[in-house]
Length: 254
Ligand SMILES: O=C[C@H](O)COP(=O)(O)O
Image (tube, rainbow, N blue to C red; front, side):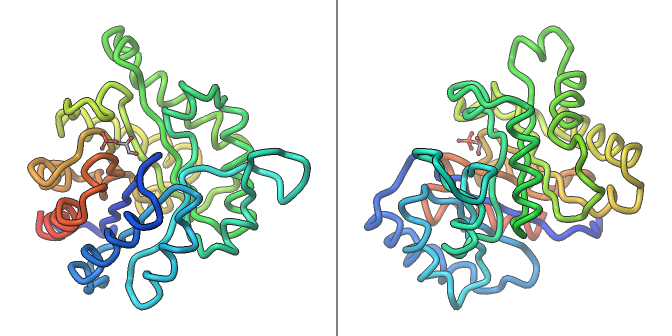
């Protein structure tokens, strides 16, 4: 199958890696992904490693991303990091609305909406995460949940191609239990349909929709073979440079 959309593989390191560990990853990983022509790759380290990792990416096709941000430019927001600071550190993208932030840190759809708007305003590519819990899936509410999350996150957002959606069923994250490629494709196709209805079919057909949840070298090809899945947001398996490089390689040839 020939897809018009370029695969996008994003490493989300979550709260892992010191400066030394990040450096060691870059030294092992970057020589393995020199050809950036056929795939987009990004690494999202913790805030403390952003600037250091950027110094290794200078001559590589790999983009730098952050895992979160606040929506204001500056001010009395102790502990927060602004979009301007992320751009200053060399970021091109930012993960927004990850389920760990929604569930553990109480992030709401309204906050996520502010973050999506701020990312777009400051020239960062938002990687908007949506996905249902196990209970919601068992109650057959997955589509309803994803629709609500998307609708509220995109409230008042002008139609744009500068957006990536990551479908991450909560029960598949870090559990070793990935969604079946068929289930992931069903939701990815549903998301594309919603965006076609809300914005337009042309833009929707160009937006990249990623799958996330226990992606590893053993299963990436199965997801990439699906029509509406354009890449992956990878947690655990992105911590190892060889494993993430293999995921990148296999995503191109699926
Ligand atoms: O952001 C990444 C996702 O939460 C997936 O994490 P995981 O690959 O460890 O399941």
